[in-house]
Image 1 (spheres, rainbow, N blue to C red):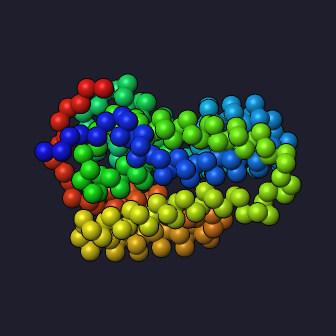
Image 2 (cartoon, rainbow, N blue to C red):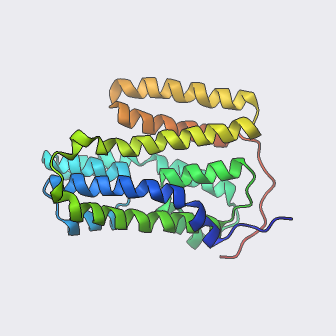
Length: 242
């Protein structure tokens, strides 16, 4: 019987996500500094907010002097999906403590959620310790990457012309492809087709009222959530001590 995956296994599993975070985090730091924000402000945003899309949105709205209440509401709505992701995590790890659950939910991102669903779909023996390792590796990488980007941001003029802000969307597309590939191997064709059709429809509808970038993010997250809900339930995992 294979051993359960622990904290350091989670950190290793998060390396591909972390490599993506380096480019995305640096992109955020570069864009933020180009808009007049200091490296210290960039660091505080990454540590306290820790939301890739939310941070890009905050920077853009602050630049046009949007009201704080509107900024807060927008970021809340954009990140509301985190509640659904955390709910899915409680189904995958039903025996974790309240302290563990709060820590997992606080540091969970779209990418770590996608990795969790992907590993769970392939029957990898992941544990809550493994998930904490994934989250911590991602969190630290994001913070350091944004600070690094801010430090060199003044050296790059007009970063948008380089397509830097597309890095976040590219990572979501990659995660969606990996998730679908895993589902084809482990799930019924009906589930795979449902996820594909649902993602396409959601993208089309979301694209009517928002940008294509945000539409891709919404379609990816909801598609992954639908796949997680429809997947065949596994036996309840043994209680884990963190």
